[in-house]
Amino acid sequence: MSRLMIIAAIAVSYYVFAILLNSVGTVILQSINSFDISKPQASTLEGFKDLSIAIVSFLVASVIPRIGYKIAMLLGLALVAVACALTPSVANFMFIKVLFACIGTAFALVKVSVYAIIGQLSSSTKTHSSLMNTIEGIFMLGVLSGYWIFAGFIDPNNDASLAWLNVYYLLAALVALTFVIVMFAPIKAVKLSDDATIASEFTSMLRLAYKPLVLVFIFSIFLYVLIEQGIGSWLPTFNKEVLGLPTQVSIQMTSIFAIALAVGRLTAGAVLRKMNWYPFLNICLVGMAIVMLISLPLAENSGAHSDITSWTGAPLAAFLIPMIGLMMAPIYPVINSVMLSALPLQQHAPMTGLIVVFSALGGTTGSIVTGFVFDAIGGQNAFYLSLVPIAGLLATLFFFKKASSSSELQDASSS
Image 1 (cartoon, one colour):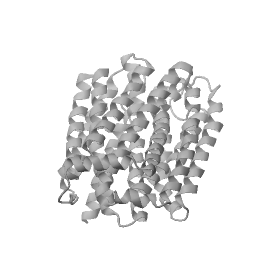
Image 2 (cartoon, rainbow, N blue to C red; image 1 turned 135 degrees about the vertical axis):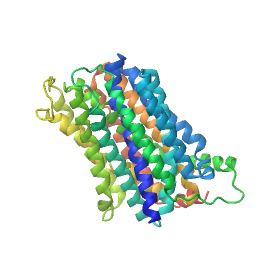
Image 3 (cartoon, one colour; image 1 turned 180 degrees about the horizontal axis):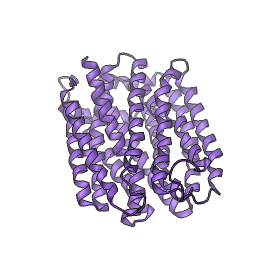
Image 4 (spheres, rainbow, N blue to C red; image 1 turned 60 degrees about the horizontal axis):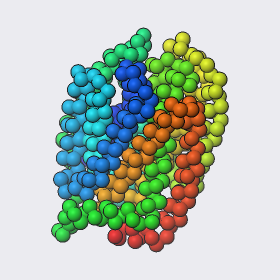
């Protein structure tokens, strides 16, 4: 029962942060509409979110085991609840930046804690990978819910209306409920060695980053998140400006991307029980490239569809492009699981700190680069650009597999 309560607490926490974090694509579109800002200006929201995640993770990942995973999660949830409650009344783009900085800060605390807790609940690589894929799958269900929740608060007759900000009252209540669930979950603190200090734990995290295996791993993480956020953050704007769909439908159809990611992650566990992770992920990457090469040409002459009020009549490209999520879905949790399950429990928090830092940097880079390319030469070319990091990820996974199969993995585990 206690194990189920802990899983429920981390799953609900991940669900609510999925809504908040992945609302950035919707908020970018609505900020352009409501606050009359440019695409490069709107793309900075990803930076406020992801750089906050990166900085806080780097600074506190080695401290979190000392203060306790539960306390870290509760601090993050409390911060976000307050920020969400204030957003509708302040209602300007500057505070939206502050909101995403708070969300990023809080998620850094929560993600490091959740990944470490998963390690406590797992007795083998197989159970670790299974639970990781389940939690990440629930995360994607939260992403899916978020698109529809936000779309429900958008005024279909006035794109510039600020009514969509009222969604944050609902989200503040949801975060408060999550706070209560986490507070009563029997989450245990990790036992630290007697001679462990904050300085030594921080140094241990830095030493991990210098291992060739870990360097290849974190570069793989960087490239993956660059692709995911580059597409996910700009897909609502792509649907509106390239495919010509109305705002509400553009956001709703982005949920196909979240559905594809959720299905991919929830089913990957079954496939991986029968197939080695490395060939499976290579198939996924090739599939991602094929989806983009087939679907993007269909968007070229799709025309305007502003008269559409539902998914009916939307161009084929609006359904095909988000299906890249089905192929990319397993990559992130699988390589995280391979890396974390090779390390002792006391190194999970510092390793997760590195994962979160480079995930955040990849997300910021992907969103900002896509935003600038989108503004300069159009959304189609911006999405074609994803083929470059896909090719890079094929290369880094080759070296990651090679390094993880060598004795170097044992060296990384024992450092």
